Image (cartoon, rainbow, N blue to C red):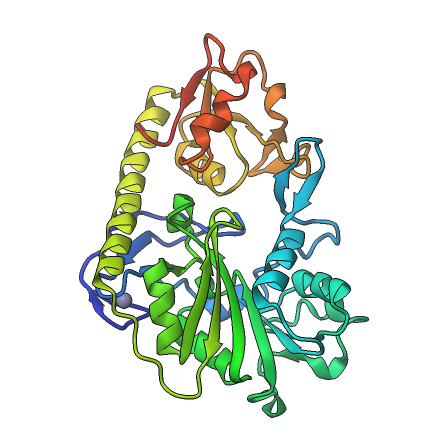
Length: 385
Ligand SMILES: [Zn+2]
C-alpha cells in the first residue's frame, strides 16, 4: 500500500512490477525492483522512492557535466542541421512566461542553467538567479550569474516573496514530494508571480513510466491538482511544443486555491496510465521470450536511449549484443554498456536480429523509413508483441 505523492490518497497495489535492476534516467541501474502505482483519486502515477535520494542528486547525477558542448538533440532539420534541446526549451520558456522588462527570474534546480543562460542572451534585461541541491554546477554559473544570485542547498531568507517568476526544467518528476516542491518555489515568488514547469509527458512517451528516478509520472489532471494544492492556479499546459513533455505555467495566488476535481479528467488519466503499465507488462514477457528464442544469435539494438538501454538490460544474458544503432551523431563512435554505438546504416550484414528501442508510438514509422533495415535474414523485434 502507498500514498499518492500528489493527493495523499491510498493506492492498494502496483499496476506494474518487475524485478531489479531498475533503469535510471542517466542510463545507470539501481538494484531495486520497478513498481508503478496509479492513483484513482487524482490521476497521478508514481514509482517507489529510490535509495539515498539526496546522495544520488548531490554527487551521483552528473547530467551534461562532462562536456560544454554536450546537449541533447531535439530534432534534425531536413537540411541536416540540428536543433538542440536547450535552445528549444529557451524559445518555449520565453514565449510562455512572456516576462516584462527587468523581471527577476529564478531557475530552481538549475543544474548548469543552460536554458536560463540562453534566455538572458535574448533578454539581457532579465535578472537571472539560480538554485540547486548540488554544488557540482557552480563553475557553470560563474561569469554570468552574480554571486548573490546563486544559492546551493538552501535559498536565502532575502529571496522569500522576491521573484517575479521561477522556472524548473525536468526536475519535478524526480522529487518525492512534488506538492511541497511547488510550495517551496511558491514561497520565493511574489503574489501573482509565475511558475513555469517542464516535465515528461508519459502519455506521449510511455518509456518514462519505467524510469526509476522519475518518481512522478504526471497527467494533465495530476499537474492541475498539484498546482492547486501548492497554492497556484494553472494558466496553461502546453503538451505540443516539446514532444514527450509538458510545459505548465501557473500563477501564485495570495489566497488558497480550490482543489482540482474533474472526475472525467482523472478517469481518463487513470485509464491511460493503466494502458501504459499493461503495455510494459506485456513487453517484458515478450522480450524475455524473444531473447530466449534468439539465444546465441547476433543481435543489435536500435536506439541508445532509455528504450534501448532497457532492452539491453533484459536480453543481454541470452543474446550476443553486437552494437547499438543510433542516428544521433553525438552518440556514434561511443560505447554504451560496453557495446559500440554506430550509425543505423552501418549495421553488419551478418546481424540476425534487431531489437527496436524506440518510443512505441513512433517506432514503426521511424524504422519503416530506413530501407537498409528491411532485409531477409534480419528479424525485427518490437517492444509490443
Ligand atoms: Zn492522487
